[in-house]
Image (cartoon, rainbow, N blue to C red; front, side, top):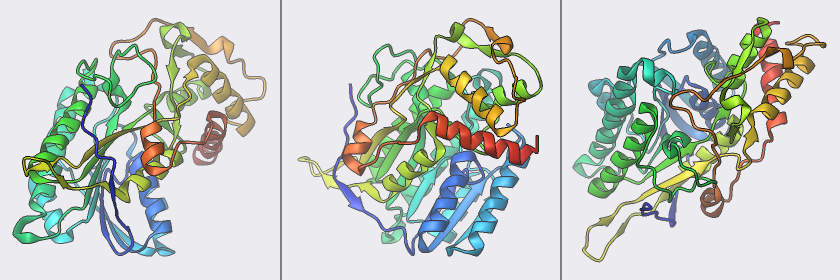
Length: 368
């Protein structure tokens, strides 16, 4: 069964608004904050991040330093709280003090493989943490306050699991996750729907498809491949190279998030006089799945061009073709027509352009 989607949107200006971004030191969160600082006037942007050590925290500090620089020239202001959204009192206090109009929940324990090794982290951040955000949104309307106008939250293409039908559509059945990570993200969508229905909270979930770019997550394939190739190690190509991924450059993701932030599902009453849940789900993906082998060759070419790898580097000699790994899926492919229909946006940055930007950043950051 498909979900009920409200296509009519209430327009929201982000100028002079308080915006809460969870996971603000994360890859997507930091890039979103940078865009908000560049494009808003008089906004108060509040971030929260627990700076966990799932990957090198130096990258998170680096992103924060970029934000600090951008803050100096911005007409808006930014502050960050170092703490976890799983801390109920901290979250409630954050909402009480700042009274955000727009909330973007990007804080989550990410990664399919790691969910097999450390499930506790996913329950804490993705379930308890998200529940705390929903409760805080619910109570933002207490005593007649205007409260949260729009909750935007990160879901994932992982919810599609082993679906054979492509491209993946938001009306597809996603009741059979193949990883705990995917199960927590599907749970987020269900929780958001129930809170939208019960408390009339406008919410939009975004299913991200393989986000990449400079200063991204080191556990992602493009980044970990780069590390291994630079060290002269071989890389594993799963399913013997018969994988396709819908890669989405981070700037496209952020553009989509900002457009969605500005258009909340409209509140409306049904025939029974009760709220029709102001709730939507969208895919954000490139809409052009790339073969994993093509991806590896483009990455190697751009790393050579940037000087990360030497000019006569033999990529073929560093590939191990291996079977599919547990919890992974052979194809991800987004039908992002809903986003284009309702927000006039579709991702445009091609894989070579995006990997070139990553390779040049990597060269500069690591001083190869």
